[in-house]
Length: 116
Image (cartoon, rainbow, N blue to C red; front, side, top):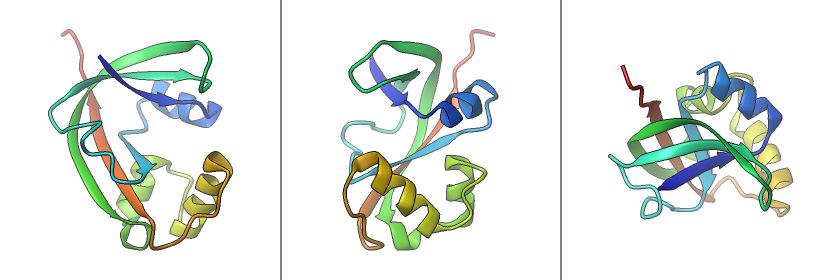
């Protein structure tokens, strides 16, 4: 089973509240997270224990440049992020390297799978 892991406490709150329905990841990772896959949405540190929040279906994966991200894509990533520049600053902290507006990202849209 694949997992989409999140480690920011802010993301954990958004996921638990079901306010996050997409994630933006650096690079072209469509092959890792193909459309129509089932994944675990998890929370935990990179090499530490993870907690499963729920199972999700990958509805769509889109590859584009930071420069081409739309406001709705930013909102699905995090409702508090208003600009691509803000997202780049966050990514620079996460990836601990310089990120450029022309860098490639993958937007992974997902929806919760329920047992109902």
